Length: 55
Image (cartoon, rainbow, N blue to C red; front, side, top):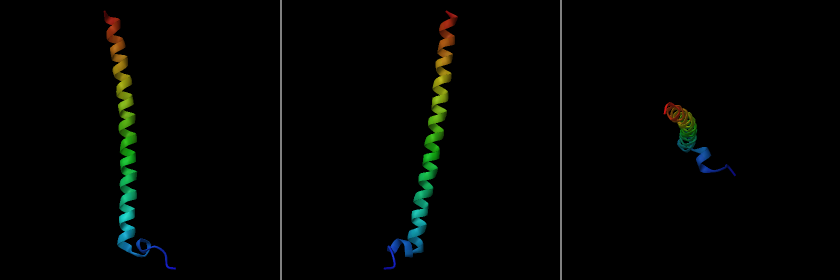
């Protein structure tokens, strides 16, 4: 047995590589945006707390 056709086909392997690469890039973006959003929320909460102390 020579294995699955997509492993023998160079174009099929390139497609799998593109899918894996896209998944890594999207995962990195999700982690980055989530981290940025968490930092933004905490800064806004501290700003609201400061504004409440002004009254």
